[in-house]
Length: 232
Image (tube, rainbow, N blue to C red; front, side):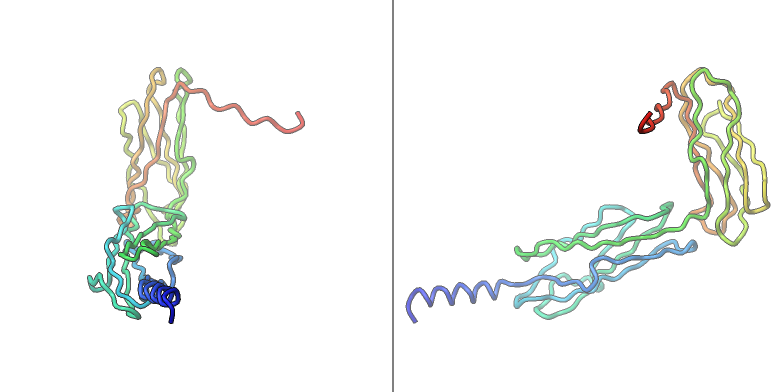
């Protein structure tokens, strides 16, 4: 073997030895959350590819609502060895469709990071419309209402609607027992700008649904003009 071929073979051997990485079976997972769920767990299984050990140097989440760690605390894995990243998502007050990401960093220069994604579908227990009540400064200080419907099968009673500002008074009207309510919010004056919220308290058996927020705003900003109709 001449020098050139020897160096090429040595280079290929070194490159082969340097190959490594984590191969995840399912790096993106879709998770459906039930109304009663307070926390959701998901497991991301992986295997070490290539022919050298891989060390996990960091596991990062980007929200305090997500925890992530290896199944047994182990951080270094041999070629061909399998492992699991265990994640837990605290549902809290989240609703709707959202994604949460976990980044796994290793000592492998060719594949330093692996991104794991939790795609969550979280049901709401209430339909609230509108989510914000708006008055213009100087307009009549009339009552405006929010309609709240209970979407679950079990009835839920709205016990209180507490405004964060004294300028606002609230009242609750039961439309359908345990199923539909109307909250009326009335400013004592609209002479000054005010921003705040109404804390809606319920008797839901699920703690994360026992409080909902409705926002109010007395503003001097004029509503945006409607978009022009094409052809007119």
